[in-house]
Image (cartoon, rainbow over all chains, first blue to last red; front, top):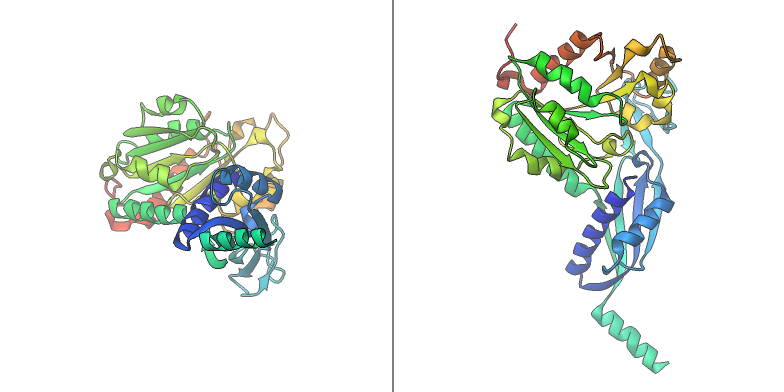
Length: 128
Length: 227
């Protein structure tokens, strides 16, 4: 349900990055989605489509890589990959852990075109 | 052109939440994020809690709902100040909604700042508001299977309040199942059985709250009597 909030925040960041790097069109967005954030990829794709409408990322491809959650037991210090409803340490059986990864949503990269790139594309088109 | 970023998407929210947390610390107030499904008894709990803390400990409230000011109207007679946020279609509160409301609240004249989040046990867990503690309610009528079904919010809870326990004898509800499921997620979280109807467990809850406030704000406590 929070995919729309995520998509809006994501588009904000993409627009800033595009401006900083003189991109006029964004083609691809790479996102890492931590398992604990409960993002449903299909819903996220829909939300991204809606949030990007009318922006430089309209029509961009959103690639979502899910990052599995990994934790470390505070007692035994061993690391393990729990299921989402069982964080018990395989050694001491206690669910008292620090999350090592899988708890963030990270924008990894964007790929796009500058005005100059687009002119180049048009030039090639003309050549063809 | 490819631009590598590696940036947290919710960084903007997290930064505002950090600022909120700083303000709570400076003003010596305990911010309590109250989270549950709709109808678990968040507002009723606050209707009972806030007057019980008075007159020594005063409270401010922010209430989040999609629509209406009904909860704010219910809590107005008890709290020093109540702010209702209507979120429209959003199923949770954001840190900046809290930040924007802080300017209108007299934080220095209160001890507790209750944030009654939008009724939902999925999304509010993903948005840091800058609170000191997350209080998660599970009511008996919701069923004993909810901890395992919605584990993420229970994993990060600082306390779980099992509400409407006066109904335990009337509904099928396995308390052991809740305790067992919770122990798989969060070994240290206390469960307080509570009823706003007959006041069962209210003293334990109030004691827990007051202790958390002393821990969080220490010497800055304003109205808490020293033991």
